[in-house]
Image 1 (cartoon, rainbow, N blue to C red):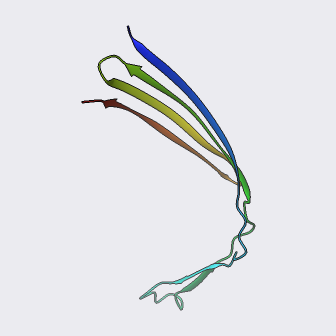
Image 2 (cartoon, rainbow, N blue to C red):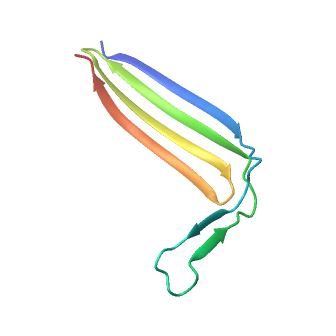
Image 3 (cartoon, rainbow, N blue to C red):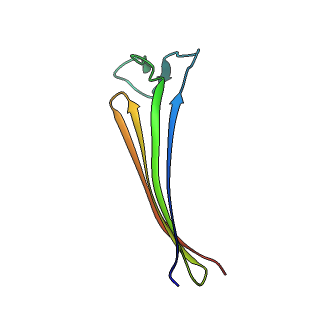
Length: 92
């Protein structure tokens, strides 16, 4: 007996709305080239993005299991993010 394989998939659609979409303001200390004050104003708000994950768990005999997962975030303007996870567990 080898064990059990448990595949998985999840997908999410995430909507973010913010009523306070103000610029980020900050200053630099000891900056002699300017007055040290800055303001970053975003061009537009990314309000809808998607997350998808494919994962797999192998539950083996003797209390040992392994897992692997790939997660992706899509839909942000100019940004795509990936997360990879793998590992093992041992039940004592």
